[in-house]
Length: 629
Image (tube, rainbow, N blue to C red):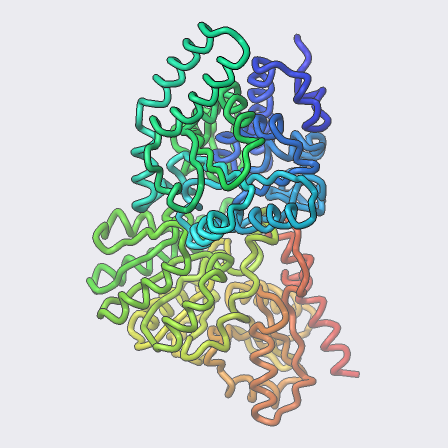
């Protein structure tokens, strides 16, 4: 059995020793390693398989220990990590203490420039690096690798506009696979599809190669190569749209032909000014199931490597996921009210809205990776008399902060935000945790903030929000709904629900952690420590009357939330106590510390933050002992 080429690759400099044919073999080995590792650990499979050849070619053509490579989004960096000295640690992908699933300067300051997990920022940050390299005289070359889905982001277009204006020495590599997580949408996507479909590139490439084989070496071949470059641009993408931004555009090039990629990159690397290389790849390339249905394999759980069959693990719960339960409630309401429309920012599968789209195709909008536009669009739809619902991950909603204030909150418009992946999200780590939404929305004018403890509360909140005359945000985690409801009390705006009664103290839980609070209370009851447990339901308007009642009748109140400590639900409780002149020293807060939470399982992250039943019970025992003393 021949030795693996990958075993001899300690750094990208080792790629120079390999022929083009060997680089192709190496690409197959890298894909095999990625597939095997993700089959055990889970991770972003399809996007990483699609860029292996491209990443190898980039590392062969540039020296990114001194040059700059910036990944957009970052979830296509696995091959990059394997080639830059992290192959042996790759087995611990997305685990505690292991290799992150995204670029991380903490892992490799020489090769990872940014910890990137959100789309659209690569051209902006790469432009900054290019301008800094010029100002510092470092001679470093800069490459931004961005997908066609992210290119539609407003931030990416702003950066292209600026880069073309200042004439920066910047190479933008457009990885065009007609996919974001789902198929790319929008007018720009249709334009790129038309470019990609042209037969001119393949035929021209063959003609030029035939020509070069017939001419002698020397000046003739130099002129021939120059003619090839100019002809390639003119024949393949005449008047390319991005040339109007001041870029010289080249391609499209087959992103799975390392030889073709190297030919073009060698020509482009020494050029100055803004350049764009259009590369065509196939998401999931090299692994049949991921290639056939790349949207299903964007972020994969463990699976059987031989056939792609998903490994279910030991999760035997029959309860639905919060995502599915929220969309069920939305569809139920939309069956009755034709004014309800739904909006996603390139996440129809992740947010569960694909089912809504199939049922109500004419009432569904996928705006692409444009979260700001999604929220502003919702404002316009609401002003026009519809009832828009924006389904979005908490971490991505951050990108729409100004629109939440200016277009929605300030106008008091009836827009419902279904804030998915709120709280700790597990292996995706710090770029994707939804730990800040309460803090960045609690002060916005007119916005109602709610978090359900169970499925009944979720359904009640969706109904109440859609009947309201102003904006709402309902947050829920990446987890399963409790198998049974904790309370039958109807949802009333600004009113909490008591789930357990006791006199030894009180737990006021915001959202899904009410289940952990109940389990903690049940454990403590066996020890003779009986506490009150309440589902707060609302962070705004807060049930201030209940807060006052608990402070007056209980030795302490412990707030509980799957959110960062500063500015969250616990802070709202402290403010309510102060407003009523009550003793805030009786209030204790359990939340996620204001620090970076690295990848791990969601359960382990909750445990580390003190937010599991066991850890909550420990805190209650300590508080109860102090109050008795």
